[in-house]
Image 1 (tube, rainbow, N blue to C red):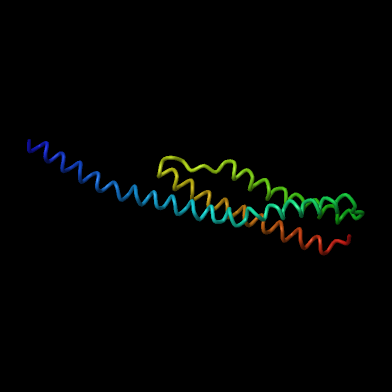
Image 2 (tube, helix red, strand yellow):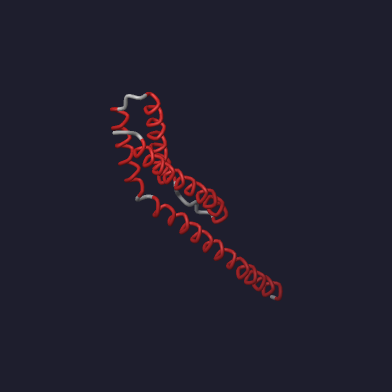
Length: 137
């Protein structure tokens, strides 16, 4: 009987110790996911601008006569396309794993990735805007 009582006490202590760790992991997962989604929600509306700029750049490509301008316009178009594709691919593949330890590691890499994609989107927009201002109609 004493063994059973000691074992029950041991299990109760074990469960009470494990619970805060699980709660902390769940909070960490939720926090990281929230940060990632904030970046996504901030930059996703910019995709409409990326697509509009790509269309304007394509019109320039179709009418340009200078070889230098053509090469630059193609580079800008590629940057816009690559930024758009990166966001679309990221959204398709973003899925938090069920296991807490795996989820935290996954979210760490996804935070880096969404920040990289965000930077690529903003940089491609800036490049396209400045290109459209400098290349004559």
